[in-house]
Amino acid sequence: MKRQHLRLTTEREITYACFLAPALILYIITVIVPFFQGIPYSFTNWNLISNASNNVGFKNYAILFGSKEFWTAVGNTFQFTGLYVVFSNLIGLGVALLLQRSSKLNNVCRTMIFMPYVISLVTAAFVWRYIYSAVYSPLFNVPSPLGVKNQAMLGIAIISVWRTSGYCMLIYIAGLQGVPQEYYEAASVEGASAIQKFFKITVPMLIPSFSANVSLLLAWGLKVFEVVRATTNGGPTRNATTTMSMFIYNNIFANSKAGYGQAAAIIMTAILLIVSFMVSKFFRSREVY
Image (tube, rainbow, N blue to C red; front, side, top):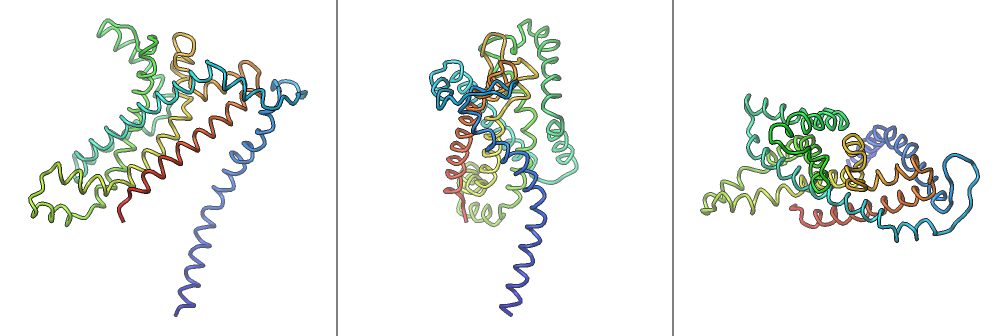
C-alpha cells in the first residue's frame, strides 16, 4: 500500500513538472539567460552601437551611486509603488467585502470592476491622459495633473490603481469565501462586534491573499515603465516622473550608454529581489495555519 502511494505521488509530481516545464524553459531562455549575459556589460563602456567596448571595472556603479538623477528615479519609483500597492489593496479589499456574497447583481458588479484589468496598461494610460486633459481640466478649470510636477506621479498612480483594483478584489473575494463561517458564529456567541470579527478573524485569515497581492503589485510597481512612458515620458519637468525602468531605458537606448544602463538594471534587480524577499517573509511569518 505504501509503495503504491509512493508511486502515485511520483506520477503526480512528474505530471506537474511536465505542465510547468514549457513555461519554465521559456522564462529561463527569455529572462534568466539574457539577464546573466548582460552582467558583464555593466563593467564596460559599451555604447550599444559598436562592438568595441573597454572594461571600466566598477566605474559605472560608482557613478550611479553618486548620481542625483539615479536616486531621484529610485525615489520616484518607490513613491509610485507605495501609492499603487496601498490604494489598490485598500480599494480591492473594500469592494471585496461589499461583493463577497454571490448574487446576480454582485456578479455583474464584479465583472465591471474587473474589466479595466483586461485592458492593456498602455491603452489605459492613453484613455486616462485624454480624461485628464479633456474632461478633468475643463470641468474643474485646473491643469491636468500629468502636467504638474508635484501631481504627476499621483495622476499616474491613479491610472494603475484603477486598472489593478479589480484584480486585487478577486483575490480577496477568494480569500473571504475560504474563511469558515463557524469562526464568525463562534465569535457572535462570545459577543464580538463586527470590527472585532474583522480584525481578529477576517484579517488573519486573509494573510495569504495580502501576501499574494502585495508581493505581485510590489514587483509590478518597482518595474513600472509603460504607463509612465505613455503619459509623461519622464515628466512635465526633468525627472519629475522618471522611474528606474525609464532611467535604464533612456540610458541604454536614448543616450547609447548600454554599460551604464545595464549597471542600473543590475541595481534595480537587486532592490526588487531584496524588497520582495522582505515583504514575502513578513507575510509568511504572520500566516495562520
